[in-house]
Length: 344
Image 1: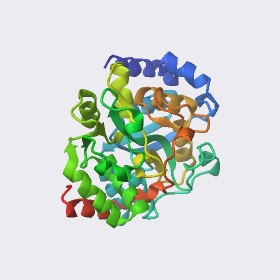
Image 2: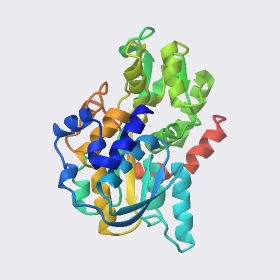
Image 3: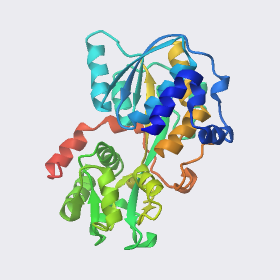
């Protein structure tokens, strides 16, 4: 709360300089576009903002508003999936209330894009992003990778399977959170990569052996306490735990070339084909905003030259599968499959 109050106070006075000094210094060491090189934003924009890391995203929005006093930014907040459905419903009713949609999950972006609602963006925006994250109609902002957090007092990294498909038969005590949205995106990726039959078999096997948690923070805490040996969770839960508890008994392992190490992304889509909307997106790709997300949220910067958060290996050393992230919008068959095998 003290950091939030500092940002709110400083933002009113100094604009983008409200980012904490260590972050500004970190950003200065990176390659990429600085906020100082961007045009000022003038006019009205309505942004639909998905929840998730919403608190930290709000800090960036406050900084943008403070730097651009002529920008009138209206924000509608809500769960990412609900906002995506609202955008589609509004379009079917013949209205457009949002100019931009910042979602915490690329599947929601795909849901909107599949309806033909995403407007083309300048190519030089996507050119700022790392290979594999360049799309025509939307811009990935920050990444999160699926991991296998394990208890380092119970296991060695070598004892953790390199294949997600091997996990149910590993004999390990496993924690998972199948009701969690990120987990369901991961299962969608598995369906795309392995097919429905193999995914159903994997879910059935896991359902027999895994301990269930409400969320993936709970999974990581369960691993750290030794309730389970290994879990399935996005990377940042482990990094945040270790940041607050350096002696935490949890470490990260990765599978290879399968859904177990999927790199998903938050992202933004323009629903209005305006120069103002495109220029707003540029602010989210600045070295300052990317550094803030990496340092505060432990998310992965996706601009070229971005440095991963402390404790996470460089993306070039991880072997994620090749998946079109917008295809993760195909969630209904995933939920039907999970219900069919009794996981949900």
